[in-house]
Length: 209
Image (cartoon, rainbow, N blue to C red; front, side, top):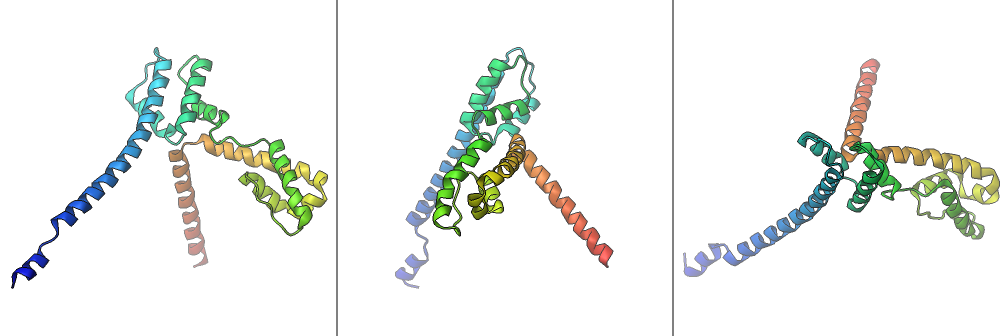
């Protein structure tokens, strides 16, 4: 084996070092993102505790609040904590903080009247093309308008207004109820639903056999 062959078999130290550096940089960036999110959440919890100094809060309770408030946007969470600190006499439950965050704009939905107004504005497109399907900024309003039919909405606005408003309010209430649940709770409920559905399918298969 000559010198050239030996050199070819030796891995490039520069290449390996470069790969390790790249991996390390990516890992550092990821951990920084996660760390900043955790830091904001810890800061919010610390502010909540400071607002109720006489409350005796255990580490287990703090862990529970941290878990079920983790999916609330940091700005909305801080605003909610500031508000409940003024309004509440005692240490607030998680549900109160989440509801306040929604009220202050974390995922807040337009009112039924606002949603209907957007539909009316979009009907100008339908007047030019009865087959078109306008795009709305509100996903709930979009789904209801599509189901009612844009052509019917254009031709019979007064007739369908109450149907739209009623359906929108019901859907908005369901959305708000879902938002009051933390991400971990929603995931657990979804898992339970899947297990129940799977069990029902197995029962039906066994019955058919």
